[in-house]
Amino acid sequence: MSRVAVLGTGKMGTAAARRLAAEGFDVQLWNRTRARAEAVGVGQVHATPAEAVADSEVALTILTGPQAVLGVYEQLDPRGERVYLEMSTAGPEVPEELGRRFHNLVSAPVVAPPPRVEAGKALFRVGGPDEAIKRARPVFDALGEVQLVGTYRRAAAMKLMNNTMLAITTAAAAELVEAAVRTGLTREEAFEWVKRHAPYLEMRKSGFLGGPYEPLTFALKDMLKDVDLGLALFDGPDFEMPILDAVRRTYADVVDKHGDEEVTAVLERYRR
Image 1 (tube, rainbow, N blue to C red):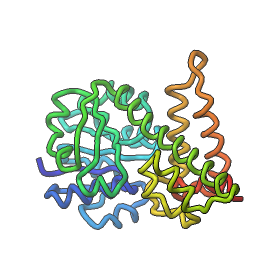
Image 2 (tube, rainbow, N blue to C red):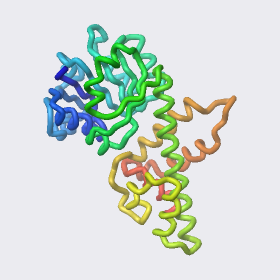
Image 3 (cartoon, one colour):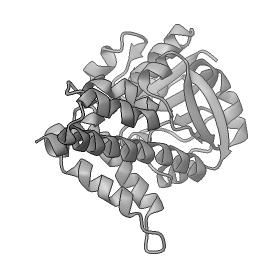
Image 4 (cartoon, rainbow, N blue to C red):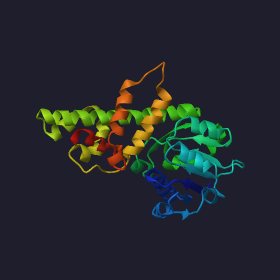
């Protein structure tokens, strides 16, 4: 295996493309905004998704949201033996629908920030046909670790659990830090206490200590999108999720002004 297509060169797609190029793969790129694909600095850029996947043995799709994913697959030919690795966070219905047309479709949402993807230390929750997964193993091995979970729905549910927990934790930490500062704790003291329970917050320390909100690894608007997907999957008349619903309102309250910023910009809900 040598030629791999990457459709979608946002932060995650860029990291994957660079890692694959560094591992010796012939990388073919497409992005809706061509300049972003050209900025990746590796591989060959194509004008359409169909051109990018031509002659590729494996194609990765790393896009934002269900409509973007479905729109790209509408332009692709389901015939042939090419393996499609759908790595977006788009909920379970999307891979289930696509899997009825693309017999070599694998659901492989990424559980890692872009720097770990580029370092080859990503984690993939993988569901789909065994033979397709086997054929894609060289790509997975270059990018990180695979956890086989069975079905498309299980893979999507695990990814949404990860991202909604991240949303809940970040919003709760933001609320507690700002409340603690108002009682007389320093911002540094407050941050150290919440970090005891969620060590991953260290990578977002800048925002909690007053800004700027960086590094930008997860935009606030994308977090809100994933919370909505989580509510669509988990919430319902037989099982209500008032905590996640409240978190959703918190992000929605600041998305218009801060949607393109790092997710810790949810702090603006309390700082304004």
